[in-house]
Structure formats: C-alpha cells, structure tokens
Image (cartoon, rainbow, N blue to C red; front, side, top):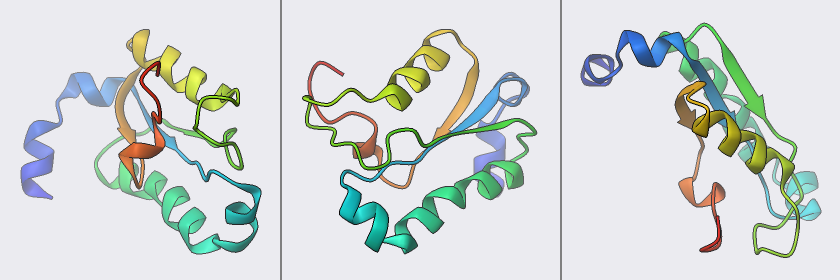
Amino acid sequence: MRGEQTRITAGHLARAACVYVRQSSLGQVRNNLESQRLQYGLKARAKELGWREVMTIDEDLGRSGGGGVERPGFQKLLSAVCENRVGIVLSVDASRLSRNGRE
C-alpha cells in the first residue's frame, strides 16, 4: 500500500472514487454472489486509499457488454471521467468497463 499512496495525489483525492459493478447476465447476478461481494467491496478499498467520496455505479448488472444493449452505468462513468470528476476507477476486472471498440 505504501507505493500506491505515493502515486495518489491530492488532486486525485479531491475528486470522487468510482466503483463500477457489473455482471453480464441475469444468471450471473442471481448465482454469482461472491463476484458481487468482491465488486461492492471495492468501496472499502477506495476509503482505505484515502477517498472520502465514493460513487458506486451498478446500473449495468445483468446487461451484456457485447454492444447490442444500452449500458447507462457505463455512460454515467464515462461522463464523470470526461468531466474530470473522478480521481480513480475501481473494478474487479478492467474488461468489464469496455467490451467493444466503440466504447
């Protein structure tokens, strides 16, 4: 954790931390509760690293990232990042963020 803290600046901490929670199918949402627990647990990790404001985006649970389904949570995350309101994005698997070239 020591090395992580040296890379985190006051500028990062002044913005929100964002936890992006996602599973691709309703079956995963119903049956893979450990994955959800790990993903929601990232909020505590952000707090450990010094963030006071942590935003959890989980609107995309049960939505495929293949491109044919709207993902309002991803759009919310993208907007917040582009508007420089986010100091860190936490996700269990970075491939959950973008699944196609357009994104």
